[in-house]
Length: 153
Length: 125
Image (tube, rainbow over all chains, first blue to last red; front, side, top):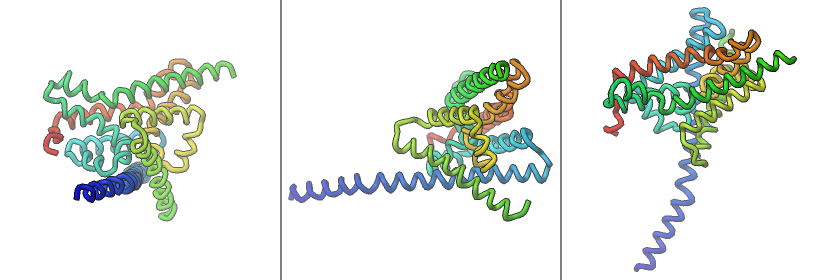
């Protein structure tokens, strides 16, 4: 009796080991793919809307598109919708710029109880801070390298 | 611009944007890199790819599929810095943050406002 139970347990464990993680991982890849793709298509939709509707171009166009996407990302995070999307889509919701907005609003809401300055305003940058630090620092580095390059060549 | 052209463009946006997100999901599944680090790595790869002039091709091909992911934010920073560098030292330094200014400003302003208005729901889940 005990042996057969062990056998069933063993069988079950190997079954879980060989089946559940893989299918789960494959499914998560598919989810990240389609949700990420749809978010980018929404961005492209706003791009067309501003380009053909308001006649915006170049930097202005891309600037206002990212503003709209960040607005939507923050709003959906506030409403609690984005976290649900995140649970479903994983990387598909983290990587788009809406995920950047989510990473700003989510900890800020969480730590609001610690005050509006050292709670809310400080915790906004728990995840976004490193992105801004490395982004700005690397852009300065690239700018300096190109500046020196233009001087020499 | 015809409807077919727009639909084909949206298809390219979907595939490229989806592929970049799937790459992040692969890192989440098969490595122990946390989400915050993945964002930094993707941003830096956007900066690096544009610094060598490659990311522009992806943007020309896939539009928002390349600019909406966080690597597009890196692309914008590097592009601004490179364009600024043509005009002198001052703009070489400020160019990146100027180009990314809209994104940073709206993230801070909307972030603060919405965090002020809404309450955290994490305890209910």
